[in-house]
Length: 232
Image: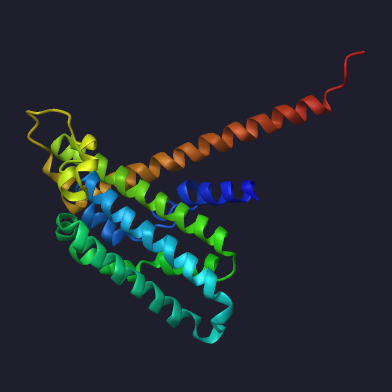
C-alpha cells in the first residue's frame, strides 16, 4: 500500500503534474505568478481545496447517484472554495487583496473537479486524501517555480513581501539577490509567464527523455549480458 501511495505522489509531483503534464489551471497561473510568494499562497489555497474536496467526495461517494454526481461535486467544491475564500480574507487579508478574483475561480479549476471525478469518487478516503495532497503540492511546486523564475529575472528578489502576505513566520523566505538590479519588466508581464512556462516544459521533457535513454541503455546491457555465453 505504501508503494501505491508513493506512485500517487510521483504522479502528482511529476508524471501527472497539473501544469507540466496536464496543462490545466493556466489562467490563474499566469496571473498570480509575478512573485514566488503569490504562487505559494495560491498553491496552498488550491491544495487545501483539493485535499478537502477529495476527502469529502470519497466519504460521500456511496450516497451520490451517478446521474447527479457532477452537479453535487461542483456544489461541494464551491462550498469549500467559499470557506477558503472567507478564511483567507479573514486571516491573510493582504494576500487576499493580491490574489483577488482568482481564489473564487478555484471552483472552475478543472484539476479539482477532475480529481473528484477520476479518483475520489472511486477510491477510499485515505487514498483520495493522498491524491489530493499530491496534486495540490505538484500544482504549488509549479506555481513557485514559475513565480520564482519570473521574480528573479524581473526584480532580482525571491519571495518578496512574504511576511506581509503570508505572515511573520514566512519572513525567512524573503531574499534580495542583486540590490542594484533594475529589473527585466518583460518577465513580470504575461508574455514572461509563457516564456518561463515554455522553458520549464522543455526542461521537463528533456529530463524525461534522458531518463528514458538511460533506462533503455540499462535494459540493453542486461539483455546482452543474459544472451552472452557464460565463460567455460
